Structure formats: C-alpha cells, structure tokens
Length: 187
Image 1 (cartoon, one colour):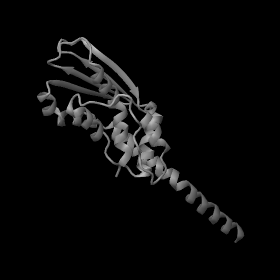
Image 2 (image 1 turned 30 degrees about the vertical axis):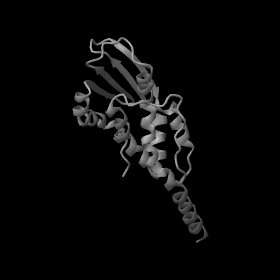
Image 3 (image 1 turned 120 degrees about the horizontal axis):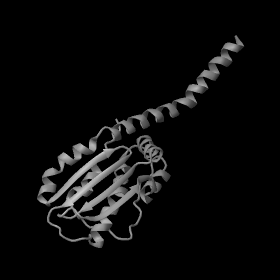
Image 4 (image 1 turned 60 degrees about the vertical axis):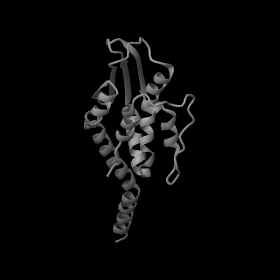
C-alpha cells in the first residue's frame, strides 16, 4: 500500500513538473510548422497591388530557416541605395521580431525558442531596374537587439523597443506591413 502511494506521488509530481515542458514543446512545434508553412508566399501575393503602385517587384523565397527577400526597384537606376533606405532594409528583419510582442508569454517564448534553435536568417537582396545589386544584407533574427529584449521579458511585462541609431523612414509601404503580418498568434 505504501509503495502505491509513493508511486502515485511520483507520477503526480512527474506530471506536475513535466506538463509545462510538454506544453512548451507543443507550442514550439506549432510555431515551427507555421514558419515552415510558406506563409511568406501569401504575403507576397497580398501586397502585390501596393508593390505594383510603388514600382517594386518582391519575391520571397522560403527556404526555411533561410528566408530570402529579393526586391527589384523598377524605376531606380542608381547603383547604391541611399543611407536611409539601406538602414530601412537592414531594420526589416529585426522589426519583424517585434511583431511577436503582443503574443501571450508562452506563445512568445515558444516562437523565440524556435527562432533561436533553428537559427532563422533573413536574407535581403535589393536590385535596381537593370538587375544590378544595390545592396545585400543578412540578419540572424536571434542576434537582433529586439530579440534579446523580448527574450528577457517576464510574464506580464510590456515590451519597450530598443532605441535605434537611425530611425527608419518608410521606404516601401509593405516592408513594415510584412513584418507585422509575418507572425500570426499561435492558437
């Protein structure tokens, strides 16, 4: 009888301590599946009218964990981007991490774990109308200052974005919108 009580207590404690880890693994699997599902192609199609109006071609190649953004400016003949535009392109990846700030604590932690474990990298390639490279940039999302700040948040705390050296200027309307739409809350 005493062995049964000890066995039940051990199983009960195992479930009590093990369930949060199991729940986190489930949320991480769900986040990983959403990131691998090709939702970036949907974003590309959704913003096509805006891109056409701005005279920009955008192709997103989802080779998870490498997400490649190929941008071609159809009216730009310059060989190099302006400093502000270049800074905007560099900020897109880290700004996308901030889209997770409104997630509940467990979902946000799961997404951040997946970003860190899978080493997700955004590759940005910008070309002018002749197809010449104006800029290339790659950013590992787990190296972003906003990622580190969000990782340090505890349950119930609010996210305060890190100060930026060069404040971003709207380069193309969908660039900011893509980062907001890229992450859907886990259900």
